[in-house]
Image (cartoon, rainbow, N blue to C red):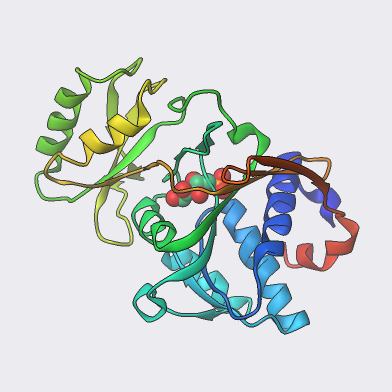
Length: 260
Ligand code: 5RP
């Protein structure tokens, strides 16, 4: 069955599979959003069902909440959990300092709140997400619908004085209508090509009235697990300064592919 997965899906799967090794009994775990995180939720669900792992999960989107319940994970709200032991989530780009662009799946606001409320954040990604400099992937910002066009104009004006390569902004669409987040907001994607100073940009953008949050995750991620299509994984720990190499066996995990 795993033979039917594309190399990129295999890479996402092995990263997710390796990351759930960090989850221990009794933990409150932040559950990310996106295709890589969906693998992680399935892997965790299997541990809950087959090995009796006891965890409570705080999902970062309605999509993830639904999947987590389906696979048998107890779902609680962040307010119930208050603080989390660990969050595992995907990313759109990861640089060598483990700073991230997130929000390609439109869940950046809840993802940032949940990751920030965690002792540790682990990012899971295929190798294509690793970049020398952030910015080729459009940077999403979540804005409130009221006056969004004015907010967009203010964002564009702000970008004039920022070290980026291009400055296009687009409202994210869902067919003919604006894409609406779980919080009822819109998303503006900023096409910047290269971000010279992500830390500065993250602070400046959040000053603009109407902007709720941006998809730059600076100093939030502790560990990144990079997966490859052949089963290899690298685990980079920014605090310990270590890089470990490992391998995940697809054959041992065939049951996870049955429903696909
Ligand atoms: C959702 C996200 C995702 O983690 C990010 O877009 C990566 O998605 P995928 O795992 O599908 O490549 O930030 O808001």
